[in-house]
Length: 170
Image 1 (cartoon, one colour):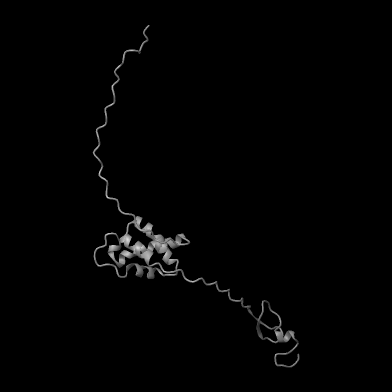
Image 2 (image 1 turned 45 degrees about the horizontal axis):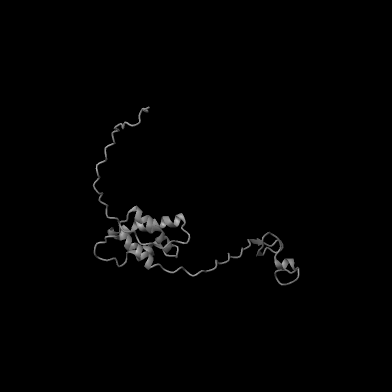
């Protein structure tokens, strides 16, 4: 009572083993850029202005040519400076003044350090000034032709009080 397929081992071809792959050479990984300050309110217009400042740095010093990735990383730091009431020119000056004379191997790291180490304090809070009082338009008195300020035409204060502009009674 033999059962078919039992007892006899069928030789099943094994798939060929893949050839061992040579160990991949890892590319030297660039160290991460230092963290930069973050703006309190990263509005798109503020980040756009920050990116413009970074893009313009290469005009001041060609060694400050930044990649898109570097600019994206540094833009919030520049925005934090702009948020502190500094002009783009002042930020550009702070980032480019006193650069070392030797070649820059990692300009983005240098800029990240400067953005963090030199971050100015927030400007003092000032309550918004109240809007100026609304000035009424000039009107001409219906009684004496004197000019006065009022929301609508009518009589001047003297004519309403029953006095003529000359000082006597009307």
